[in-house]
Amino acid sequence: MRTSIAHAPRASGGTSAPEVENGDLRDLLAAIGDALDLPPGNRRPALLDGRVLLVLGAVRDVLDGRARFIPYETELLRQKVSEDGGGHA
Image 1 (tube, one colour):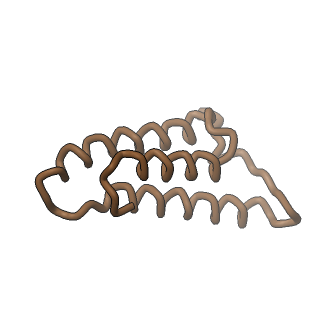
Image 2 (image 1 turned 90 degrees about the vertical axis):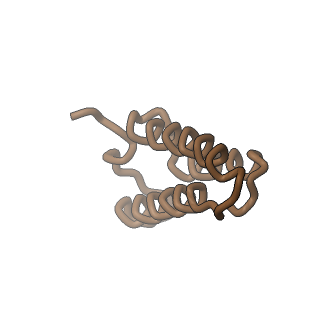
C-alpha cells in the first residue's frame, strides 16, 4: 500500500490528528462538490470538463502524497475554480 498524506497522521494546535484530518478532508470534499455543482446551460459541459481535471489533479496530489497539506490543496482548488470564469463555486 502506498503511503499518502491521507494516511499520515499529523496534528496542529493541540488538536488530535484524526480531528484535523477529518476537518481537512471534509473541507476538500466540500470544495470538490462545489467545483462540480454547476447550473445547466450552454457552457456547462465545457466548464465541467475543466473542473473534473482540476478535481482529479487535487485528488491525485493528496492520494500520491504530493500535497504537503490538505488545506493548501483545498485552497488551491477553490482558487483555480474561481479563476475559470464559471462562477457558482
